[in-house]
Image (tube, rainbow over all chains, first blue to last red; front, side, top):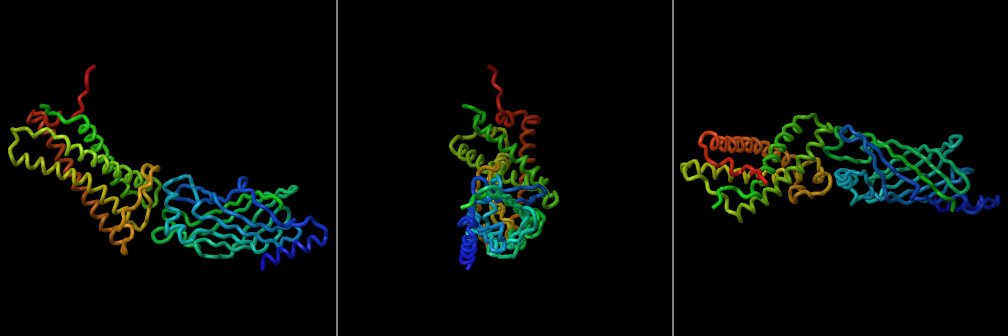
Amino acid sequence: MNAVRSLAVVLSLSAFASPVLAADWAADAAKSQIKFTGTQAGADFSGRFAHWDAKISFDPANVAAGHAEVGIDIASAATGDTQRDEALPQPEWFDAKKYPQAKFEAKSFRALGGDRYEAVASLTIKGVTKDVTLPFTLQISGDQAHMLGHLDIERSTYNVGEGAWAAPTFVGAKVGIDIDLTAKKK
Amino acid sequence: MTTRYSSVAILLHWLIALAILALLVMGFEMTSLPLGSHLQFVLYQLHKSVGITVLLLSLIRLGWRLSHKAPALPAHMPAWEQALAHLGHFALYGLMLGMPLEGWALVSASVWNIPTVLYGVIPLPHLPVFSTLADKKSAEELLKLLHQAAAWVMIATVVGHAAAALRHHFLIHDDVLTRMLPRWRKF
């Protein structure tokens, strides 16, 4: 379906002699980061997912037809603390064995004026899919695009931190997700 | 015939003694801190690391003890005192090996399922069986109670052990204490 829609966008663009495949972008993993922040025992911590891949179709001239899909390798989460990193894949947290991948799927985009946009998306973590809206800024210069977005979620929504951990006594309920993406036009 | 403990035995004795004191202080402190404080979390993790260190040192010490004869108790000690001394030492070995193992089981059965990473570097897996118990909550509570009770037995035994050593030194004037003290060699 989405592929068809992307194709339709591409075809309509080519009809106006725009560059072919102008809507497709390739993320530069070396210049991009998917980070998360939280609190543990009153102290802030941050981590990042080292492995993920993104398929992005976005045209500033027709944002509603855009689409993006980001698959995140859950086991690649690292916070720089061995103790915490050993805990993250456990069943109480990400249950990485059972749910190896988290998914972010932007089904459409909205332009908010200037370089501000938002993605109308669904976020799947630990098998739970919820609708989210990701506000972000986007700067395009030439064939390079730089996107910055931030999203706050409640970890309980996705059952991250079960059982004794469900209460925010040790680990805060709110988790921030920061996306810093650099992409090149295909 | 030497009447002193070997340097290895002396070193292990005092390292373990220091570690046990640290474990007791940490143990009482961390269980009285409010749930969720940063210091509490840090103390728990350190307590686990030091506890496993005591287990390893005690295993080495036991191996050394079994392969190197310890100096005999003084002949002037009555039989009942000798029996009590042996019983005390036996209890200490039991606690030195048993408490870390029991603590390891407690950590493994805990509903918190907190991984143990020795000194933040070496991951230590949970003990099998305990980590997959059907009723972890009850098991954890029981093991916790047992660990606390064992701590009091440890305190009583260590106090008895130290008191006996001081009595030998200051009242009986024999070498029971000094033969376990490091000898500072003059060069």
